[in-house]
Structure formats: C-alpha cells, structure tokens
Image 1 (tube, rainbow, N blue to C red):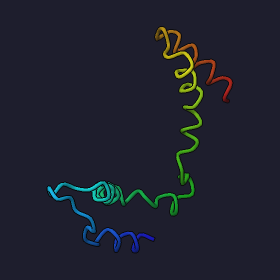
Image 2 (cartoon, rainbow, N blue to C red):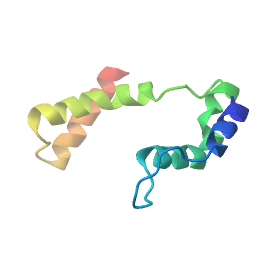
Image 3 (cartoon, rainbow, N blue to C red):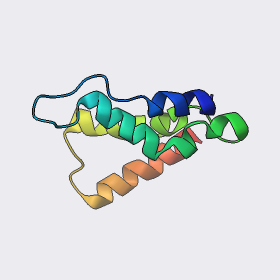
Length: 90
C-alpha cells in the first residue's frame, strides 16, 4: 500500500489553473504527502483505529447541546453539562 501511494504521489499534476495556482487536487496531494508516514499506521499498529469515529461519538452530545441551545450561557454551565455527559457516557 505504501509503495502504491508513493507511485501515485510521484505522478505529475494532471490539472493546472491558468494563473499557476494549485488546484484542490494538488492541495490534497500535498497534504497526503506531508502526512504519508501516518496514513497507514492503523495497518501496522492494532491499537490505532482506522477511523476517528470514537472521538466523534464522544463530542456528539456536546455539539448537539450547542446546536439546540445556541451556546452555553456560562463557563460553569458548560462544565456542569460536561460532567453530566461524562458520567452518562461511561
């Protein structure tokens, strides 16, 4: 997989903008190249999950609360809510 990724990243750009700026595809390619050492970590380390789904699940209740209420009215209110959610999700 890593070898195949390397070959793909070595290919010259297919699309170019008239003004010489990077296309969205070029930006994606640069981002992948920058983090290529970490892309397949989950294949060699079984403790690393292939997705960040668990992290997103943990944030979902707080984000829902923010969307419903518009915001927390105070820092204390946010802390109280986080305490309750933490106890319920355990």
